[in-house]
Image (cartoon, rainbow, N blue to C red; front, side, top):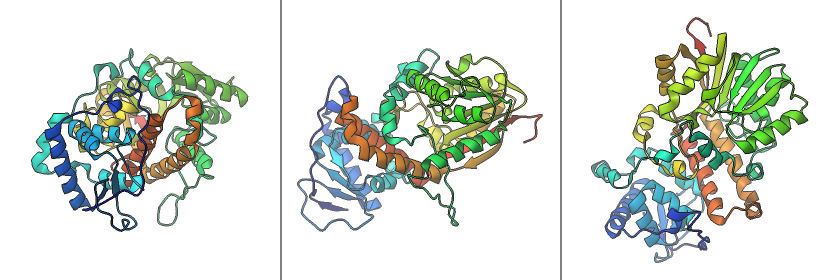
Length: 428
């Protein structure tokens, strides 16, 4: 580990205790802070991290590619991490206690084999700071709309700052180079989002006359594209902001006679459909309600019908380890969620329904590139956030969220799949 003085300073964001109570509050846990400091130095030595802080000695800049953790308020940082672990690490970034000249490089290193961040002999320390998500965030029928509101109803204009003109908030599928790597660029993103949508619609065999149920509307691009194929679309959302804009976009496309958007929980879905498509919706369902989700798919699917899902996934053992654990992402970005494993999807569908996963295609590197493009555009447009009513802590929260997610896909800790589910009696 090398310790140096920082080359830049970051002003402390104005912290509104009412809006950001746990970011504004700096805990005082001296013993835990000492433990956090020792673990940090050990981690830096093992992973080749460069730690910079105000009291460090001046040295040469870190070589390119070196993960750098630049501490502006080391004491606050260590007390936050000592009390809250990775949640405290994220809150320290929100508060401006630390930065990095290359946030992705640092977070990618930390996302590599995250189970080894704490030495095996000190795993018991996890009990000191790990908590369960609050009961109010459990995505029951009563709570789900509030959870969705806290993320998707922030502001359509805010999402438009970093999404492409299709307003598609899920992984794109890019063309691939000969080595299999996605060929991603900002200009190619709208086409790549249409490629993703078309693959899902093809997987579900959506065409003229298809009765299609979409669970999770987004801002309406899939519904528009399906209706343009001649399908009759019913799309369900719990986001009032998305509902208004999706309906407007459908009407603008002249397709409101074929596509209908309803403010409706998936559990209350009505009707019978030839196909069901759901894009990155299962992550918000919550593990206790996965059986309900798949039972709904089975209940509304006509004989011979097909279900096409796009789902973020994680390794099964990591899913089990993180289940029922509060995380920074759950606390500040996606309350009530749980990323499944593909195994969990297969087993839940098989245990509770007649549906079976008959195809699963992975696109993890494509999500890393999608997130990179979103993050870069968010950074470029962030000066406009204040005009939309968002403060500096919000900017740092979303900067960290996008980079944190990108790092997860770059390391393979996270993946994304397009999955086909059919009933036992139907051949894929």
